[in-house]
Image (cartoon, rainbow, N blue to C red):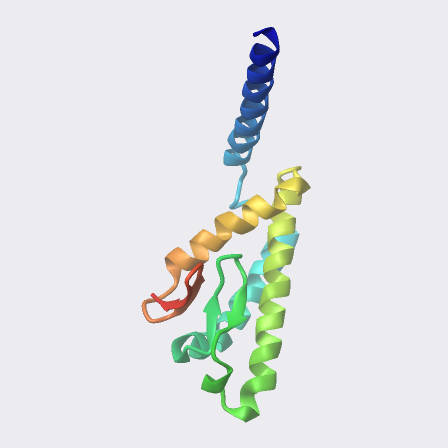
Amino acid sequence: MRTAALSHLKKLFALFALLSVFNVFAAADLEVNTPGVNAIKASMQARHAQLVPFYNSGAVGIGMDGMVAICSAGAVPLAQRQTVNALVNAENADREALYSEIANANGHPEWHNEIRQTFAQRWIQYARPGWWILTERGWVQK
């Protein structure tokens, strides 16, 4: 009986520890402004206008992981495929850098993945109707 009670108590402590991590993360400032964050956002904003036609055509979509992906290479004329690949790679590099920069600015680099997931939800939420989203079922149009 005593062993079962100790085991249960250990599980409760583990649960409280886990919940306290989530509560601390909930206090993260996702809108933090640092020179690094501002530079990354500016780079992303400059690129966005170039990506919009590819989102609109269904060539590029938004993944559940907070990244951009090519969902239909056939929707991209052969002459533009190198361009769209470069745009997607640059966008994903900036997104990774943004998540890290925000985590670091909050003094918690270990929050990178949680910040990525929060932004992934935002990217999907703010995607325009008709854009493609990668879900657990595959690509679906919003």
